[in-house]
View 1 (tube, helix red, strand yellow):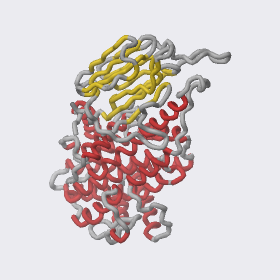
View 2 (cartoon, one colour; view 1 turned 30 degrees about the vertical axis):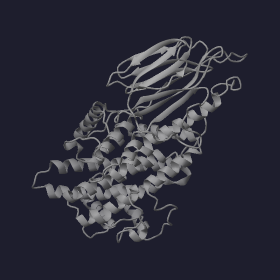
View 3 (cartoon, rainbow, N blue to C red; view 1 turned 90 degrees about the horizontal axis):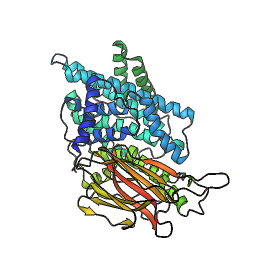
View 4 (tube, helix red, strand yellow; view 1 turned 120 degrees about the vertical axis):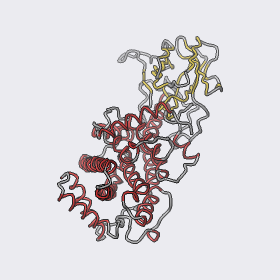
Amino acid sequence: MKINSDVVQSITSSIALAAQKGVGLDYTDPNQIFQYVFTVMSIGASLVPIVGPAFGSIIVLLGQVLFPLHTQDVWASIRAPVEALVDQKIQDYHLKTLEAKVKGFQENMVAFTSVWQGYENAGPDIKDRQAEILRMHHTSFLSVVRTSIPDFQLEDYAVPALPWFAFAANIHITLLANGINDGVSWGYTDVFVQQTLRPEFDRKTGSVIATRADEPSGCSSNTCSGDQGKSELELLADAITAGESHHWSAELLDTWRTAYSALSVQRRGLLAERENENEDYPSYIHRQYTRGRSMVKPYPPGTNQAIENPGITEAAALRTYADYDAEMIMNVLTYAEFWPYLVHGRDMPISVQENLDREIFSGPYGRYTEQVPWTASSPPPVTPRVANLTSFIVRAYDDIDGYRQKWGETWSAQYGSGTAGVAHQVDLRPDEFVKNIDVVFGHKLGSLRFTSNKGVYGTYGAAKNTAFSPTLDTPAYSLNASVNRTGYGMSSAYITHWTGATPPGCEGIFFGFRPLVLGGV
């Protein structure tokens, strides 16, 4: 798999600097979180060859990304689009519970990061003591996450909460992976790593199909056996006692006490087993993602003249599904692809790499749905990247007349007219990608303007025949959109319909995007 070294270097430098300083990343655009998490997971799965002390703990890197300086705003912004697309909000009482869990994760992440840095920098005379403290924080953090996950799986709000569940699962899986990869060097016994951490990792990631009979002694779906011959409850109690005697953060210790209480109840068998209790995380994610597709509420067509503008209602509906699929692929489904490969010694197959590089879409903008590869009942298929987008030609005058594109050295078919309008050819440089497209649309596809990481191309088209006809109550108007997917570059564009009837021209368009991290040349 080809890696875009420039993009990776920029992202990893930001993460490493934050990790070294012990502060969160400073970003406010929630869409940035995808490319940060994607890069961290790529490092963990050995897709990105990064070395250095700042990258010694995948969970520490993940913490910098998931808990930036504006954590609450970023997490809320990740949830909001899905709530809008399925027209369902998490009720306030449950949202407060989830927000408290997220705050608890953050408390533990900050503490674990500090302790890990102390362990890494410790001299030989205190290394063993620092390792003991690190193990306490690791096992306690795991207990907090294990007991919190069910709150993110409440069936009534499972779909709008799915991005938050995926983030919580990211923390759980990377904690397990770090323990498996590095735990023996921290002082964990090999028995604990191989008979508790690894089986739990395999069950949660779907790497193996486990039943209760397969589980190690002392590890049920609710509780796991601890290290050094002690139970998870005993280790957590020891950590709480140590924390109290050393005056560790009161907020941190409260999360441990809450986890201890939950584990105590589970250990006594006082809680009924939840439906799908033993479902692995990827299976749960795919089930809820599919369920959510059936809940999508199509966008309105944007005009009350749908009869006079055939295809505009259908295009608006599929545009909604494109946005739902893109949100879920970026912030949920992609992460699940990484999980089984975060432990050392597991090579990622080509099929999984293609899933990571899958094309997501925006549109159609305008009318009709010809060539659209998704429907209301099925998402777009995964197709391999043949080559990067290298050139495109827009034919335009009054409106958009035609479009053609080139991947590598191969030109596509002509979409729309190959003779009408004026041809405008854009040849992208090897390190250039289109990051945004401004579209004016309505009755016709009126104009296009492309913004790359190097410059701006267009505006092409005068949007002369785009406006919907005026009525007694409404003046003539067009629709417009700025189309982008942060962390992705434009990989394709397709015209949905063209007519030669007066006025001639293209009547709709949709765009494909692929991850920038994997767009190496």
